[in-house]
Image (cartoon, rainbow, N blue to C red):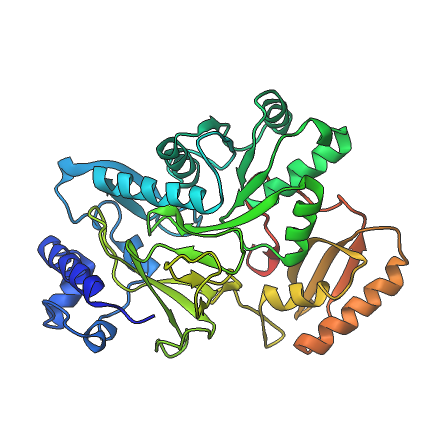
Length: 411
């Protein structure tokens, strides 16, 4: 998807804002002698921005409007380094709400729905983003926030919630609790909107089977408004993203060059109309691809594939580069396994070791299964891990995001 003339004009407005604010990106533009872009080639010469740039701008160095125009701040949910503070103007909040409303509409949700919102509120963008869009749509918001699973289920039954907004991890936890307590017949859920973490096909299938609902992937990140910048429609052929608000590129993470539509790479986003903290060519490190062609739904908004992982989630073990998705792909080959797994990396007696804990979906010969999995992983990545097959429910469940990789070498 090449940037078009309208989008180039919007980028030039942002360039003007950034130069006037003289923030980190404005200084880069000045140093490069850039005052405007006129062609696709000009745009592709613009420098990238990174999360580290945003951290260094703490607390309000990203602001490109007058301070009295800032009506809200949000912060990214990361736990390492300085937080990233993103200021929003009233128009930014309104635009975000309109995008989120569009997400609900693409999922077939109307003002007759009752939407139970379980992601966190506060500095994190999730809960308040889901609520803002819900109110724009005119649906009933049930703003639960995370945790207190018994109360979540009670409200879900009493309020006859029809839509669940959650992380996939918490949706699974809720599904398992419903099953344990025999509550499925009392639940009125029809749809689920899940985001903020990558989830496997096996996990998706479990949630679909156990809750009996339509599932929708929502995409977003705090630096770029928050969740709500893209969602799949009922045809489930990728997530439509809102190219009237953002311009999205896919680059080769190593070279930084754009790749053709259909090829996998790293998502890079430019905000086209954001006022409080516009970003140009922001490297998200999320891995996906732009899906060529038109969706059966007829929407002209382009489509993004599922997020397959991150370009920076690589683990180096015994000199070998390993991505969690590689392990997930191996585990998916075994129908005897459930969706839940955990990888632990240790350094003992001068050697790295990888332990994989994975839940079985039934009663099997765990020892034989462990050996088969270990052999399959070795075939994929080149060394043999220690595999523990455990009973369903053994691994911890999360009310937020599941921590699937624990590197004990640095703890």
